[in-house]
Image 1 (cartoon, one colour):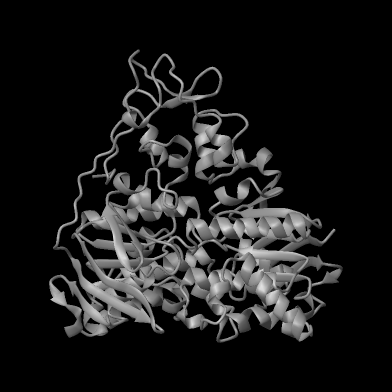
Image 2 (image 1 turned 90 degrees about the horizontal axis):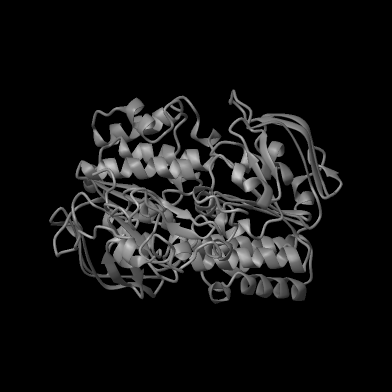
Length: 568
């Protein structure tokens, strides 16, 4: 046995509800555990218990015991536990200690007292495993959020811990980097025997690799615990693959796209084949030269490296654009340019027809709202309600604080301290602090970081409601399901330019990097499960369990066109 939780209860200071509630579990050597649950269910708290940060750093009320590698965490200094457990927190920006990448990765091994040669070897191996060797001499402040996340994981891997704990490690990563991380974690687990506790809301990439799935309930107790194959179907908030399997009664439920595709048959049935011709969407948006935001020959370089090169784009008023691209493509830079936080080296940004070179950051504040990748940068007041009041004071506006909190799904959180919230809850609190000012343009950078699937659906509905009120929304995201479900337009950025800017059906189907789980399973034009709903029936399964289009009127099933704005 590597670790044991024995009847553990924990309550943060000044909090009335326990984050963990009489929780007991064991972690064996060599396990790969996938931990999930709704926002605020105690996942991050459980992770912090393993290296002693809870309760040594946070304080609060702690009951029961946690033993890791034979050490009781309440009696063992966190520095000593670091040789057994390495934790990558939900906020890698707040975990860094060095100025440059190589120094960050070397910091842990240096504190273990290793030789210079051993430290150098661990740094190079860890950077290579995470595919970030090219970043070794870069300053951390010049990295994108996703790149910083990869470096934080590399720093943890360099410690060669017995237990590697990762809290939402792919929340800021593109599909390729996410796959790289999951593959690296699987190799550490299978080849080196490193035990892994992986906290995730985006489960598809890890379901087929994990040996155990644990789901926490909202009250900080264990709701499910078992092999993913046995318990995934009982998740209260299942991922797309599991929802597909349940929709079509596939058995066993697929844990990977490869397993799901085995159920999908392209052979003819009595109702005809499932193909692209039967899956249709309305593609009614086009991007012209005018809009709420217009970029003209926009260029920007960071630390001497070109990020945007003669970038041209227009964002129509009242539309939602999802910015897609690999880590470091320039998505965050673009949003900061729109907000006036950065100034272009060349070219122009027009907000509602006015070049922002003539406007200050303060002058733009009533018009342009910006939610950064790290919500903690917006949260510094003693209560959530105070955060919203601060926004209104700065803008000299009146606003509906209670209604805004209710709209983002945290209606009862006004009196809570933002520091007591989970990552997903802090994300929604920061969003509320932006929305209460009623901006006409809303810029979102990875808005679903730390959010469960249910919270993402709530956010999707909220954004569509805002767009119907002529709010123009531009969001940088690696959440492809959110983009397909929510966006009117997809913009792919690469090589410093806008590669494509069109509707989801025109961009995402068949893409290697930007297709959704549903598209990878079914192909054609289907992007979300809703695309598979027919006018008279649903995509079902034949007697062999293979997918087929069924119809209630005896004719060939016809897929109902999905509007780009489903609630329009």
